[in-house]
Length: 163
Image (cartoon, rainbow, N blue to C red):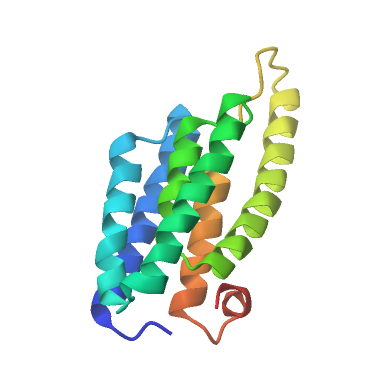
């Protein structure tokens, strides 16, 4: 459980940034660079507030972010994922411990599936002929919020997978 008010504030700021990312992705199908940059730049402050050691803790976070970016860049190259989604997940990798990040990816995939089915049904209902686009930043943001919730309230169900 996060008891330090500064850490709590940083996690709340991250939650607000994720909500902004979700809303802008729904509205314009874009996640702004300034937003993902702010999330990424907030991570070292969170590391400091969490008393993370440079080795191995911060090194693991940086390594996770590099691997995340490398793998997701392949998805971007084959047009399976947008650039904003790649940057948002990479920035989140700087905040979330590696094992917990795997939980985030599972939750993101589940939420993304529900989102895809929902948008697909809406697309068919409106009889739209253009290409279906999914604001996957919503699934990423909701999975991130779920993890944050588990970090703040470890006695609640989300904590079993977030911690």
